[in-house]
Length: 492
Image 1 (tube, rainbow, N blue to C red):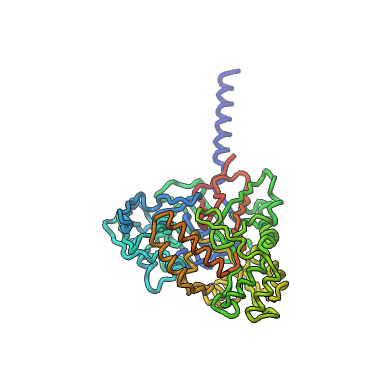
Image 2 (cartoon, one colour):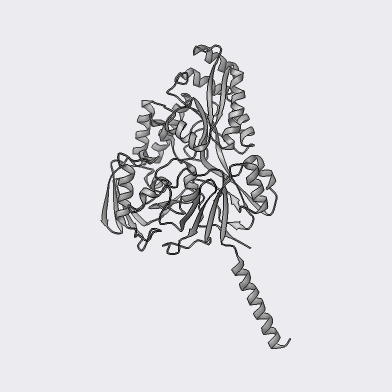
């Protein structure tokens, strides 16, 4: 071959390769079922907030990876005193918030003073109660003093509730969030989408993605069509009843993993007749857990008998405590003074697992004489009426916060359970770092809340993601709430 022709072909090949490289996508469109009520994870309980902002817009001193392990975040390292009461964090230098203001130890102190303040609206404020003082040693060093050892302190610092915010922007983070993360907030078209773009001056490793758009699509059929048409590139948690459309299709990746979502028939323990243990036990016997799993999760849910994730080493299998037994349920209702049963309302948030579970449970309860009126609610209404105002009889919800059994030690929590023994055991659990002791205490609490039938324990929610087959780096499991963008990238 003529050398000049060979050179021309080589250059053409190089140009084609370069064009191909330039054509590699760097944007992603993610479909999510729920629109967040706001975008500040330090001021709201909704998982939908963290799905958009966790580790994307906002970062903590540490971060949780997809295995559930604690990794460095805004703190590059830390030391722990021998008595477990002093944590000293060394912060990364050169970090800025998305509005250009600098990050340093003063922002850390501000964040936790605000979180622990009397008027704080942080949904998990109780988790940080052991913090007695936060001291700025110098701009890149901050010291936490605890009132007691806390075996989950570092993990809790990695949750969305503890991301670092700045005094200059904190008050407006609900509408225009400003953090230190690899992606900056661009716009929120309410009812439609949130747009994020890569933050140029980001202090850490640059993500492959330059832009991410979260599209709010609550209807399964619409989400299915959007995925098939390529209008969205993936979703982290797709309706299991429609997964068969994508399984075996090489154009898509179906990722089935675990979550921290204990799905429960949440019960208002402070309200008659549910303040009666016999009534709650009757409801537990009326439940056919496997039927709910088969009907509401299409077999993907894992049965639970208590409020704990089955994949956790502390989990105790208590699923046989109240076996499905309609006659036993009727006998317990009669003993409780309800020989003819009773009527109640079941308020359901707008997620498929709740709506489907509600229909199945209503049928099961009817066999025992309990008539349920199903009330479908939008997410904001559910958060206000049920979670905040405790205006409900029964509801169905997946509690997705990791290691959240401590909510049973809070009598003011929305399901109104008040048990001094559980509160004492939880205090002991929080105070010890010895693994054998923690295991024993956690299993004691699990046993008590199951025997008390505080709630109807149904199943652990699976994470069922559907993604474009050319995407990689998505989390298969969900040890914390969020759709973390940092490792997602397009491949050939």
